[in-house]
Amino acid sequence: MEIWQEDPTDMVLDRLGRNLTKDCAPLVKALGELCGESSQPRARIVLRSALLSRDADMVQAALHAIEKLKLDGTLSKTIRDCYQWWLHEGPQDPIPGKIVPKNPAASLLSLLIANRQVSFEGVREAAHATRFDVRDTAIKAMGQFLSEADELVDPTLDDIRCGNLPCRLVTELSRSYPVVCSRHFDNFLRLLDSDDRSLQIACIWALTAGWAEKSKVQAKLRSLLNTPDAGVRDALVEALRRLGEV
Image (spheres, rainbow, N blue to C red):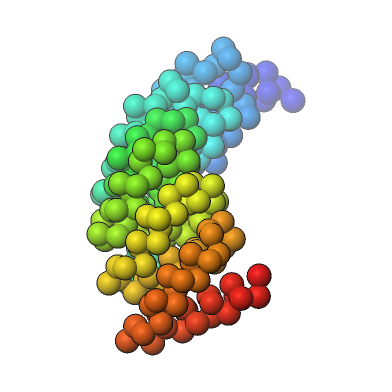
């Protein structure tokens, strides 16, 4: 047992401080469980270096330790810089059929969102990211922003209608924030006048989720039944059938 006469935390920190190689990710992750308050200054140095590496596993390991040790405030600037690099310079979604390369951008964005260290404009930018996991994280965050800042809702719906934001945000709002949708019902209805069939269909299903005034929705959907787009027409017919059963 003499091997443990030296503090294992110091041993790990010494090893990581000397040479932070790719195979060190498990040790970096273990810092979250090993480090007490007295060793956190050394841990911060190691974790900052791990965040600045260009290895996805290393960054994920650092994030685990940072959250465990509650160092996200102290390392907030490094986390933001790291996120920006992986968002813009890191590997993106591959050609269909190939393995998606590792990229911790979504995890970094989630941590920034949880600590309110990213702005509405920041998540808007991420909603256009190439990677699906980043877009998904951003769209959910936008819904949360809109639920807390009602003045942003109508301009955001206008941006969706103009094609400046993905129509998946309509689905997220309808599913997770029906009260927000209800307060802006008329603007939701206007989304149906878009020429974007994906947006029209997303809006059709959103309006049948139970938060909208049934008679007005039915009247609007019926007015669109002469659309030449078979896919939109089928969605309208099915939506009206569902509304009739409620």
